[in-house]
Length: 480
Ligand code: LLP
Image 1 (cartoon, helix red, strand yellow):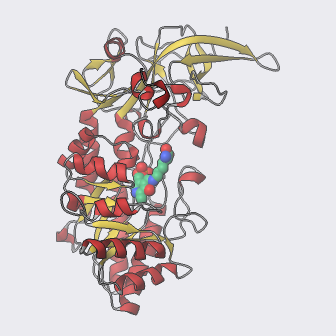
Image 2 (image 1 turned 120 degrees about the vertical axis):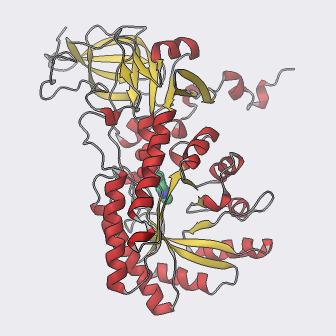
Image 3 (image 1 turned 45 degrees about the vertical axis):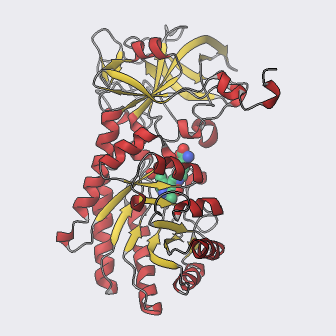
């Protein structure tokens, strides 16, 4: 078989065009912080080898490096605290973890212990966040089509106290939140989600602030001002400030800076035209991460916070307005690199293409049900061996799942050792964000569990689904 000519790992730089997955020492940003290749070739995360994990817990599974999650949360909170420090004439900064990236009680514990609030976008996310013990005053609720039940829970109906930030997405929602708040006899603290016209993000489906998409109210066409007027006219609503989430998987700081300026200018207009001053600005999430060796090293939270802070300060000065309290809502950049997916290799098939070239298909025991991102967004991932050190000769390979679709691709193109065989363990890095959270039961595959590893021990933070869990949903399968 064609070896592809790439150099073995450890024998210096791979040649140009190589798609060999970078080792943790080569691209630490791609891997959970504690990942290392042991002397015997096995990959280890959190002091636990993935070989042991696969044997004890079965594949496929997600493995989350808890120390890494803690570190990434801390990096965001300290970047925001530092760059928006009161001593620089700012009013403080804050980071809210976007729960949609990956949510369970342990994640809430870890990120809130590092000072993050939680940003939610559904009844389920809000309910889990509150049940996990997050401080309601540090929780937000998003959504472009909120249910009354979501707003009720957010306003403290039933149990506990209400949350402090509901993001208003339309004029329709002003009336809806007002009605629910009036019914409960409370005041809802709200922010307005702006559409700033900025088009950014790794894929059309995840760009969220250009005009022709469903989120937010437009600054340009006047709907944002209309919503602000309606809010300020309501006795049950208190306007905290303005929000903008421009998109996801964004490189660099330019788009964030441009959006921050538009938000600040709009805030100044509200103050000028309506005499309403506001104290909060939330600039959403969106900072990108690396998925493969071809991706650039990601922009750091500190860089984003620094450039946005400079813009906010300048805009406040130029418009003669106060410096707001600024928050962000990172999801992917907190959870994404903390987690790897471990699969076991099954069938390996060489397919002869037109012209005689051979494409190798390496099938694993999961697929589009545990990672829909390649099929949905054309997202690129990489993979390497977890049970032994990878080495050349290499074979350009396509890692596929076990679903009944030819689009069930885990990694489109990667150079794997030529001798990859059934029983090998393949590991895919950077699956912590939008992996488990977008997983499905297609072909009645059960969702893999998420195993947290730390200091040499491993435990489920989300148990794997069982077939019995799924069968229990079907009344036609009830035992007689
Ligand atoms: N805030 C709001 C209002 C959002 O809508 C989102 C993501 C975030 C924060 C967090 O953005 P992040 O820091 O994670 O980029 N399923 C897609 C990503 C969808 C993002 C939706 N909103 C994917 O797998 O790429």
